[in-house]
Image 1 (cartoon, one colour):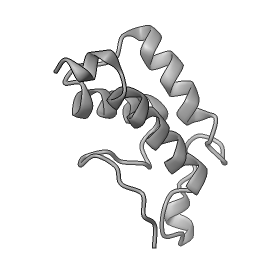
Image 2 (tube, one colour; image 1 turned 120 degrees about the vertical axis):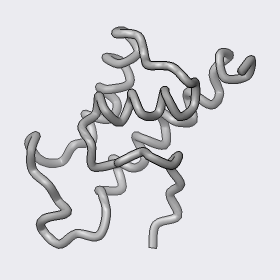
Image 3 (cartoon, helix red, strand yellow; image 1 turned 180 degrees about the horizontal axis):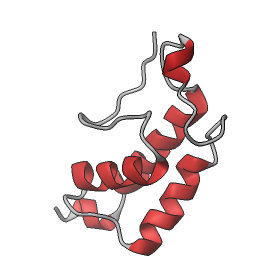
Length: 88
């Protein structure tokens, strides 16, 4: 079983831009700027093991690939450690 913890409402199966937007809303209470969405979206997208539209869930797997979860957690930690978060 995975020990990964994501904020409630974060769907690790969603596309990179949706994951990033959901993380920003959950952690910072706002949507990412275009630059932030691009930068952090690339971090999540770099871990996509299959072409867009492929759903591992439909192939009988129990969860998203560990590299994708790690990338999502990295983005979450970056936001949690940001100056903006410390002043919220």
